[in-house]
Image (spheres, rainbow, N blue to C red):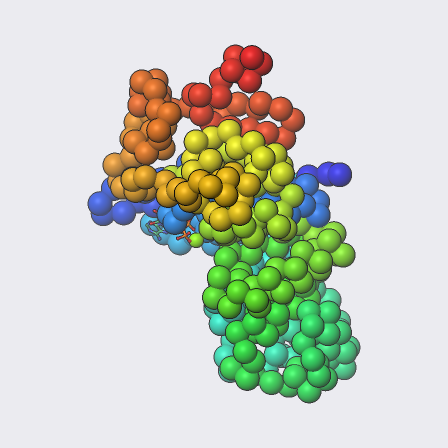
Length: 329
Ligand SMILES: Nc1ncnc2c1ncn2[C@@H]1O[C@H](COP(=O)(O)OP(=O)(O)OP(=O)(O)O)[C@@H](O)[C@H]1O
Ligand SMILES: [Mg+2]
């Protein structure tokens, strides 16, 4: 397997009147081709900003810096705006929580699919666009696709609309899909269907999926690996099974303990809520950002930011408790 995405020291800071918000603070991670990576954490952790930063959709006063963001071997940080526009919607697509964000209400679905197809294959004819459009709608499970392709977005239900967005996302044959809370706006039964659909399609097409969500239950079902984010940092990164069975960072343990049936909580135990609140982004603690809420906090945690260490292949954690000594013991 080769890497489709390699991010090194990505930082996105917003320079506001009140001060600098370090929404994403020097994170490094990578994704394999065809991999499903979950990005989890509480609200404000920097999940969405990470997604937008990769495709460089951050407006001033936001500023992105990175040693590199290699996508398919090419550094996106060095691309012109024109080149980025080609990459977005074609090789990398983004799916948002609200399908209406991605759909244009005044165009038919046919036209919106055709736009992406033309970007990908400039010589494609109208008839070919229609045939491919119908094929894509069928792939995402839209019944009566021959007729439905002529409809406008408002003529679809929420779940069907998100399927249309997925069809459009697939039209350009992407190598990476970044999905930001793609099912949060849908009701629970539809959520599961749409997630399973995404999982199946990405595996069929060999495309990688970055699934941003606050929902660890969803993550445990469909991802291969997870990045846990807190205050702009990746505090833990691990294969999904390992993360769920043996979370290392106290923050990850807290997140897991707050979901029912996770295995992290015994039947006779109460579900826990992580005490305290996410800190004010203008006034972050000096050491570990989680220290003020951490039951296992030591003196060093308040003083010094923990380094990210690799505890085993593919497993990283940034926590003073998880020093190499303890792991070896
Ligand atoms: N344009 C902006 N200007 C200033 N601060 C911003 C801007 N966009 C995001 N932020 C800040 O960056 C931090 C990370 O935001 P982000 O949207 O990535 O969080 P998130 O993890 O996606 O949260 P949620 O689960 O609520 O979607 C937050 O503190 C947010 O307030
Ligand atoms: Mg978000």
